[in-house]
Image (cartoon, rainbow, N blue to C red; front, side, top):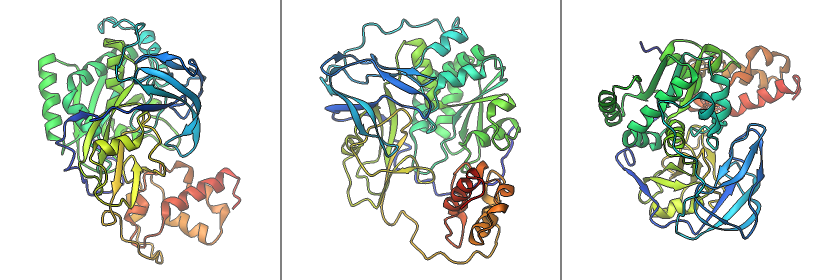
Length: 436
């Protein structure tokens, strides 16, 4: 039975240019890849290679510590440097720079494939190097370890509600058998009695592909098609849609017996188990009105963003805004030499006509649209008023710390008030103890 979540908005999809484009390899392999040793927001990493050393595809470059995910070479070649380089998160991080020899020589010590019928929970967790590939970049091994024996429902998230982005859609369509197999193995190992693949109802070809695979394999996986609404792909909202259980405040899906994994993460886990392969490549959507040939590309981790644009025919006109990720929650890109990382799902280059026309901010008339749109039951207009009046003592009762930064409030506001930025400011004030 499908349920619904509170709030949300209906931005234009803009997926028509890439939803029918099969996943393609780069027309010209990158001459050099820059692989950050830190791929997730948690933990740290220690380099295992030195300058001048030869490496192969899948060879470990770092060893994760404090639950950080390990990193592997995505091409074969020579290590040119181990130094700080530009990172998509907007800072410089220690990275391994590899000169690509074009041979894609596999690492001879790849782990042996496992019998998927006999994989244990420990074996599942041990195949590290995978992080959440829907944008969160949380180490999957840690997530699996926390969920083992504590969940009854595994949710494979293929909703992909952000405009322009079709990477998960194409992966589900073209690799549905691998995804279903991975979901079954993960659910069995973690003790979940139910595994559900969730996608939006407008992805009919992917839905049909999954249904055909389910019939052929007699897969013990359910398919849930939900109405297209942003932010369906967020963890708390997708849990409520599938199970009807609401994840309140700072709670996690694990607290209500659920584990949510992105469809690309499940595919990567299946590859690690069935083929012994580390996470070295991923699908990235390159789209937007400024892109000459929007595409879905199979990209080595560490590839400069510039190479993705070149494989998509470059820019046909000046881009007003370049984003990593979708336009609702994406991060502006200032340096196209920054590399693709494991959580990069899209590079979006927007024209001026695709952006909302700049209009002066006007006065809030308390229409309540932001309250109706907020999926976390917050009242952004009240937070706006408290900040205007400098009523810092009222902010804790408005719970700005529960904001998931989906941007629904700013998107729906007719007064064009930057409500998301104001909620962030309020959250920082609460964290400081009520000070400005």
